[in-house]
Image 1 (cartoon, rainbow, N blue to C red):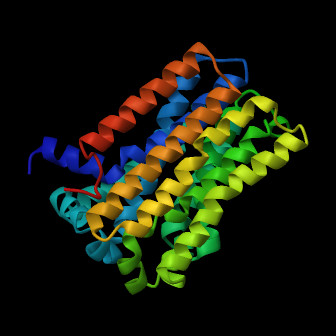
Image 2: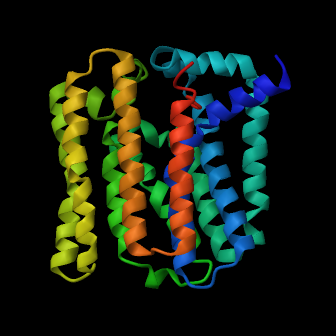
Length: 309
């Protein structure tokens, strides 16, 4: 296999589409602190992307048993890349994640090191992904780690903006459908989630309840003046929750379930970017949001993911 082919396999296994849900948290949080240094912005963005990539690669290595059932295409990409190359890529990724963060500052580095520990324990050791509550909590660090990392570069954690809690709630609950296409393999591997614990229809109803909960939290924040009225615009995304669950009920084939998962990712990205643009609309954040949407569309259109061939 050529180096170019191995590079493509490694990129697919690193799942760049998932990076695009994480990166805006850091970009907007850091930009909103008011002391923007482009060197820190570029380096921090790269580190957050690398943390997400390393987490995905490590998860790929630890999940091969269930992925042989859920995601046979992923196992093909692993075989093409080679087990040794995959291990070296994981080791190099985590090594760089240890060495690079102090180049920003100490506070940023502490948050990234916490992210490293959580990314490892999510798939290995305690294997928190196999426990529904812990799995969802760790999944929510997709907001907590990058947003906090961006914020603490210039600001104390105690002054973090309330929108952080809304975004955390959204990410915590929006992950309920991420296991939908993988239920069969998760059952065999004894991984507990909504779709392995409950009957399918019940699981979808619970998932809908979770998807709606950030809008309830938003209503509370608005009524208490914790967030200003401009955040009412977030309710424009509410219909997507019902569309997703309705579509999931009608899905029968793995391909249909994958399409629903892609639609769910799209909804997550639009909600996150929409909320962040309400929070801090500037020239650089608008350009960043447009680039992230374009990259997301590109990765989805050209199937730069190990979930598909």
